[in-house]
Length: 203
Image 1 (tube, helix red, strand yellow):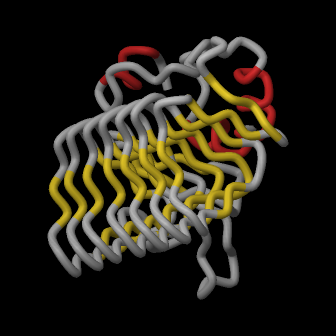
Image 2: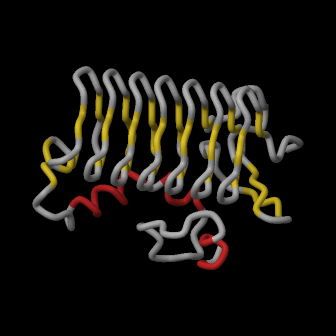
């Protein structure tokens, strides 16, 4: 991907120093990315045991946050949420009760309602996931578990077995919808309630 192509999905991805990288390269390396980012955070973050939480963020009782993690200003993490294996939460983000977020970037002003799973994904700005929706990151049912993606008219081999979705800015994901591994959504995409997205299904 190049910078222009990235911009068709996400207007400003704060970790995009090399625009020729693909989304799964960021999610696969998120632990190192976040550890490095923590070194440059301002002093309005409290860094403890490998997690950096802005002093205006709210983390409710029962949430489990495994390092490394960054939670931005005015963000909210609900009770019994489970954040693991590297999670970036931008500013003004809401993570509902009982959600599990793994190896993912959730950018500013997005909301993930209660009881969602998001794995190995990049979620753009102002995205809303209704309750019970899933960004799956692994093909359990396939003998060949390597993930392919559809970007424009090109089918691309990711060389990884763990990648969820790239969800463009302003998208809306309905209740109990499922994004299959390797889902790529343009800006302002609408996924209906109970809908299954499977863009590449023959590898």
